[in-house]
Amino acid sequence: EIVLTQSPATLSLSPGERATLSCRASQSITNNYLAWYQQKLGQPPRLLIYGASNRATGIPDRFSGSGSETDFTLTISRLEAEDFAVYFCQHYFTSPHSFGQGTKLEI
Amino acid sequence: QVQLVQSGAEVKKPGASVKVSCKASGYTFTDYYIHWMRQAPGQGLEHMGWINPNTGGTKYTQRFQGRVTMTRDTSISTANMELSNLSSDDTAVYYCARHGIKYYYYGVDVWGQGTTVTVSS
Image (cartoon, each protein chain N blue to C red):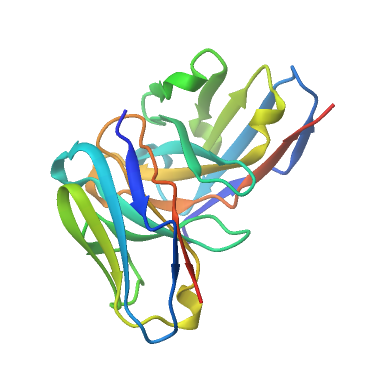
């Protein structure tokens, strides 16, 4: 099973600042089958990025993904109030499609 | 619009089973895997497995093997997840989500609203 480790666990920033979230895999993820999700309290996760670097439909361009093999990054260029939430990475290379433990982005 | 609508909240006693349904609309049901995930209170997400609605084929995460059964009814575009021998550790929100079969690269793009399952004596 591929283990995904996210860091930091909590990130405290202000609106307008840049956020950088990390996701490290225990083994290489072929074809960049890596996604990022945003989750707000009481809601299901929302797909932000697929294929490590592709924005999903309707996702603002302040969200960007990068990385390959075992090291992946989600960047939010200029934080807006609505971006404060929990972010998860997930791979879909092999079963199980495990998730990272999440990064809480707080004001 | 594309939607996955799940069945309502459940309260079960330890040792019982629970069945959660997930009705798809707005797309061709057999073109997308249905994955099942769960999230315990205040915790992260856990992948339970998936079903291919086209073939009925399944793949279960090892820790749920022997306790989980995923099925589908293509006539009503509905996927089901049944979990048996429940314990308090199974208290969680259960989600279904779709993932393209032909367009696998695009990942899991639509989620159900979640079903809360509470296990309590």
